[in-house]
Amino acid sequence: MTDRKRELAANLAKVEERIAAACAAAGRAREEVTLIVVTKTYPAGDVRLLSELGVRHVAENKDQDAAPKAAECAELPLRWHFVGQLQTNKVRSVVGYADVVQSVDRARLVTALSKEAVRAGREVGCLLQVALDAGASERGERGGVAPGGVEELAAQVAGSPGLRLDGLMTVAPLTGEYAGRQREAFGRLMDLSTDLRRAHPAANMVSAGMSADLEDAVAAGATHVRVGTAVLGVRPRLG
Ligand SMILES: *Cc1c(COP(=O)(O)O)cnc(C)c1O
Image (tube, rainbow, N blue to C red; front, side, top):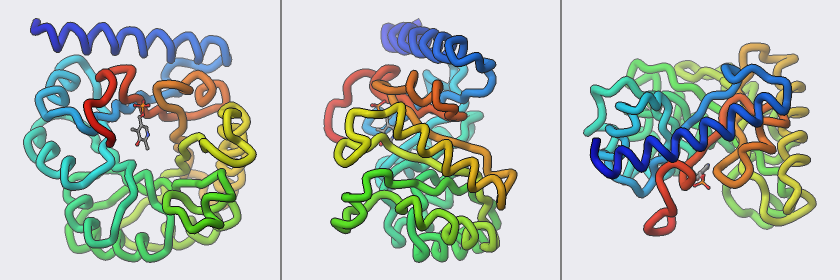
């Protein structure tokens, strides 16, 4: 085993231990939580090692990095999640490799995703990214639909050919009423998920929690955690 593979294996084991402990503390079965490893800024070689170590879900946040990486790893048994801000001019490329887009946050993006998914003959899973920091939405910052907009956007996804409504995603807010209160933020996302599932029972994915706060997400009821630095190390550049 190479040093890098040994390092990734050790990190994965630690993350696995944390998820298992969080599940046990919450009275949840370990199988209820899926680990998605966020490989952004790391090379395709690391993705390959992770695949050899049993990882089945990876996530990327920038199409220009993700597209060549996904192409290099095309034969690996991986599901690719797109978790970054997505511009409509990148949608055609992203639909070429992403199984799930977790950052669906506006009507124009849904329209573009549907068009390209149909064109490619693919079904793309969609999570609505919820912005729990109301201030951020009001300031016009990108990245998430406000809680009040979830129902309408969900209906649009559910009615769009080529798309499958899978659930909700959030990133714990750094500002606003939930700043420093990850547990409460993730609890709010769970409430929104409960509401969503009344109209869309199959949309039961809840993606929340990263390296620093995966325990809070598991405690709240997340089905998917997105872990980058705790597996791969501190990123060499912002991403
Ligand atoms: C980078 C990223 C993660 C992983 O963050 P870490 O702190 O490195 O675990 C999770 N979700 C999204 C949307 C990200 O961009």
